[in-house]
Image 1: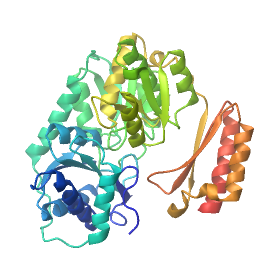
Image 2 (image 1 turned 90 degrees about the vertical axis):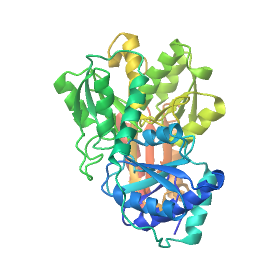
Image 3 (image 1 turned 120 degrees about the vertical axis):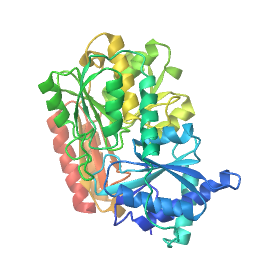
Length: 450
């Protein structure tokens, strides 16, 4: 068994890499490690999940592991990842667990822990859990299988989280015409409750999950359907979440995609105008567009970048005192109100910025010029994805491209934290030139490392 925890929990193909037995071992080890901070009593752990068909199997495995060492489980049902973080801290649970593979296809799933404050576990705590799993293996437990569904508890969890989100809205969106894409995922029940309570006129797509259609041609990673729906309906805005609803991508009234960089830009300006942008600072990642930093500089807002991954954005925000940060992909963190990215919460803050601006969605993001950016995935063997710069031919190709674009753009190559991919990103003025260079480099990487 190799390294279990990646940048966003334990992930893999459900039933193959991520089995019920491994879930049981993780539940058992997690409860044992967390019990060290519970004064001798068994830990109370809240579990939520997205809509994948493998969620029940993994939830049962976790439950058996937790109960086998004296823990108690609260089954919160299908909820966004940020809902689990929020419920964990507001209900004073000792930990929360989310069963989700976020934006990935349905065949994948994942297990992610939150501590009692609603933050992802520190590396040292994950290491302690992993050590126990590797030490004890996937030994069977005597606790019977089968999750007892508490419908009242699940409804209360859904209601409380939706009510919380609704209570944070400070501007009226009554009558606003919206199209909302729930990615056939965890937002499917929560989003309608929130937006309809606020009086928006909503059309929903991607809101009929069947266990296998999560993120399939819908949601924040596939906005084409939302773009069509917005233009056909003549809507004011489109909002797209991913499978576990911790990401937000928008579509403006013209049908154009508004990514995380543009959303953060509008929200940063709005917070700064009201004196609520602490440290006058926005935290993004190295993948954010060059146009974001230039637009923020023009607005007099400070800017810093972290490594790719919302946990690294959060760590840098905590270290520097910032309250707003996120990723181009739509993970946006409003630290102080939330401990992780929350797609629906971010949508409400973006809608407030649009309303306060007095114009359209495109008006709200018009101050940022986005430079062409090409991202190509090179599929490689998982064990090779961190070794691409050790290959002399790949290193030479990277150096040549960097020289060619010097002063007019940039090159960023990085391994995926969750998939057997190396991501090749080029940014500059000429889209066709960028695409040709990125395709060529990705093909080279696949040939050498695939």
